[in-house]
Image 1 (cartoon, helix red, strand yellow):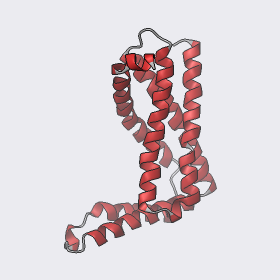
Image 2 (cartoon, rainbow, N blue to C red):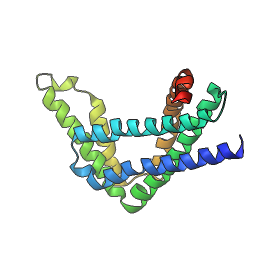
Image 3 (cartoon, rainbow, N blue to C red):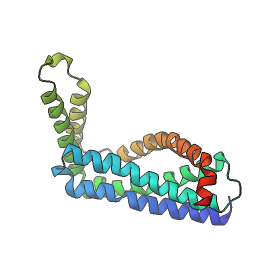
Image 4 (cartoon, rainbow, N blue to C red):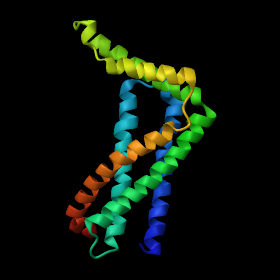
Length: 188
């Protein structure tokens, strides 16, 4: 990897991490009063759109500077940028949630999981209570325990490892799409 490419990847990874930091900040400020619909729009759909848009824009920049850019290199660039971005995000989450307000993190997620359980129970009034999923109850219990006992020091590191695994698959799909559209990307 040449120096210019390393600088590009480092720069974009840091920018991605800082952009993604807006999501936990929004959650800190508005999470307790946020509806399930707003949560879904902001933290699932909005996050995926922002993340994918930035990666595609940056892959266009790097691909346009090469005549041939194989799938392996496209995947590597996308994954390293993402990994750096998620590492920055993890450090930010640790600073926000573990250091500054750990009880609020558990409280926000407990309220959110209780709301999901309540919505599920209201939508399934005619079903016997035995058939309701225990997964939602387990999630509520998990967040209750975290609220009572505190967030473990490794909580966000474990999340980072899980996200990087899922992200490797996502980056492979994006790299495949970018490679298939390489001629389109270079001309636009």
